[in-house]
Length: 567
Image (cartoon, rainbow, N blue to C red):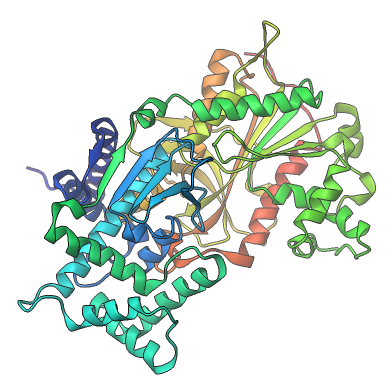
């Protein structure tokens, strides 16, 4: 039998994880420490995702991976023994606490101290993401258990001391804190410095946003759960999937509500017949570029000549920017569908010519003649991108007549992992390669490297649309980059957007020559040590690439309008 390469083994592991995850939603439940849970753990260990670092090393607990997961899971998850994933649940008139993690638009409710319910509204990618995190936490929990319960006399003295520290209500300081961190480092198999850095990360987020329980409580919680499992099967962690979750998958229920609300808003504002440019982006860059200078003028502040200095000047003036923008054709459409995707509707016809930044090259006369509409939709999550774009491009039935929106262009500005470069670089897609399938989509991208300033490195080539950021393996990514694919980056939504666009072209909802633009700024490099997503956010260094892409897209939209040719 021919030996498989590392990348082939990793691809099998990804496929195995996906098949198991899909089957469990049909089965209705599973135990992370049970037979199926062990299969998930084996697949994740075989895959050894970059974001989980030393997860596969049984000698040490993976701290950066813990930081990443707990920033994206609800506070108190370490205490839970019962987790439910559902698609429809109305908790508005209950006493259950709604919990939203620090760095993920994920809604869950604390039914009790040990039972949480996740309300899934964004599709399969959300399910894979949650199950990946649960599997990772279970792997780390068993490491802790084996470290502290491997002795014949029972639990170790370090565990007893941690239990005492967790029971103390007051915060530890000075020598007592240092001793507690040292003791914890022995349990974790980590150095004092590594443990101290992790403690400070959790403590910072605990103090600033109350988003976690602190490192001591987290380690005790996940370790104690496994210890209690050994005393009684009643204490085993069980994950449940409700029938409503199965019914929701691939049916676009929330996406249909989202698109319907957006189209209704356009009709209410009498904007449904305008030429429309759709942009998938964050909720600040387009708004700040168009309305930031006017906001500064209105408040009596100077407008910096440098575009990025202007952006920094309005970063903390969100309410002022939106107040000014509302006077000039800006409408904020808050999501009420459960899709967690807000929308900005910007009537470019109402822009104040005298309050546009001089470095933003926009043809004001063209805007007055054609009255284009800019619709900026917040970031989707994985497969959700197909759902919302498919619903948006479908004709709307009004008074018995099907009417399609006049979509002139669709632009996607996303965050992505770069393969040949570093954080802050820009990637332009020539195609989207769907990981784990034979689906590939050629992109007729209107953007080129010549559109961007020479101060930023731009890579052009295929982008890999991945199953999830938590399931990425160095060998698989290296193969996509160094083989004939020559992929320049990985992302989660572009291929799903393009799938919806291709479907809409086939169905005749949009013209085949409609303009598309795909540009990504590098938030990480999963092949470079210290530059994975687990190493932390970009911070201020992300301003230039983000706003440079936004500026280029705006200038493409606001300077010409070549009629699209019919198929």
